[in-house]
Length: 193
Picture 1 (tube, rainbow, N blue to C red):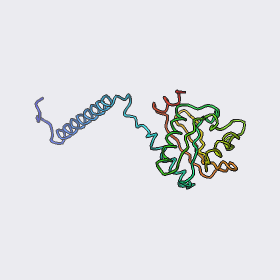
Picture 2 (cartoon, rainbow, N blue to C red):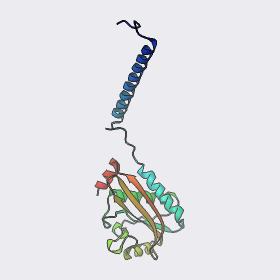
Picture 3 (cartoon, rainbow, N blue to C red):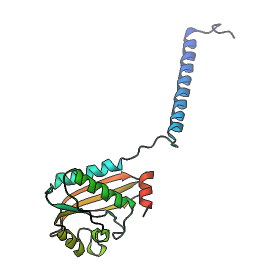
Picture 4 (cartoon, rainbow, N blue to C red):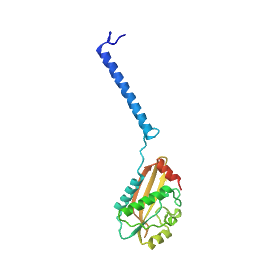
């Protein structure tokens, strides 16, 4: 029947509201679909963790808890898997490099030592104890402290624990713990050796 014939004004208003609502829903769905395609992500845009910034903030927390003498060096050991203390991964090596870099940026001298096997935690001696070789290396470089760390991987997160240890007596003088979501970048670092 023709518009307006036998129809009240309220019915026409309801129909117009319904048309506007449907149009708005279609526009929202079309826009969100375009956004997913534009960013190339299935299921929406993923937010990636800023690994570099997170490691810098962890190093800053260590320095706040244990101010170090800028005249004496620090050694940074490779961060290792809590399940395999005698092995590392690209993730562990990269995190160690970023933390060492941040210490240098903050005015703490870091001695570059490539004897990584001597700077890893030894499984037979436990997490908090440094090996005899590490004590000898730290003494040879007159290192005031050693940064050690472990990481553990769950299904969705990587948990990192860092400590500054005084090589004389193995006393932990600062600690920083943090977690990162396992995204594609983290997964790639964990898979590389």
